Image (cartoon, rainbow, N blue to C red; front, side, top):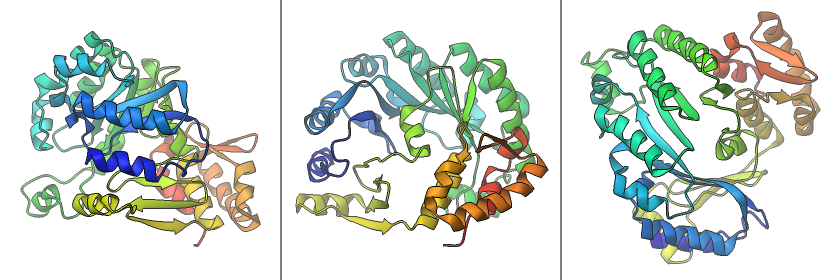
Length: 344
């Protein structure tokens, strides 16, 4: 797999043109399974193909049970300067219900070990709204992160995906269904507690101390170009989107033959408008009417017509042509975006 990734980097080297990289993100799978030697091969290849900003954000996504003291010390010898850790919860009951590989002790230990190793730029993932996460437990999960002084938090509502084991258990009455009212209540708890502890709510699911916004994720939300390498990886050049085959063996076989196994979608102005609405309204920067008019007169006219209702409802605010969600609106972000979509 690593050899295939190195080869695809070569094959894709012209995709971003002469772009200087501001972020590199190893994730979407479990890259913390890679050895430091394998990570070094990837970084050396990237460095040989692209100019990289001196203060580039270089993130490794990691499972808590992979972050031993020895592995963390070795990671310090690589260009990685940020860790994204999938904690999910500090509760043993939550973790067992979510079928996570790590336990509560490892959840705490990996953060302590990472800080001890010198990684001061950490982000952790937490999940709220699961049937076993009481309001008190959710408050305790957040407080643990605050106490550690973590600079960035990503928090997601529990969802049950179709055709998963959890979906099967819920349908058969072996597990409680997700309670939307509980999720909304715990999201409001989150917004209040994060603000009290000095975090800026800069995207629906993301909270950061000043100076610690995620560069990589912010680039997605702001519509910047990006290149994805590996099975299932997505890329975007501003006009089209492409994604690699999701099958590991098929991916490696194609790359070995010098072919990138991807599908491509050329985006119409209406599709680009809809994507812009979906991503921009999730952020602190909001949707800018100056940007919207670049997608054509019809989307702009429709947006200005439909946004009036949302302004009157108090779910959206407008300031100098920029539209952002209110706290109430953040609870309804997806519904608001859909209401502003144009027909494709």
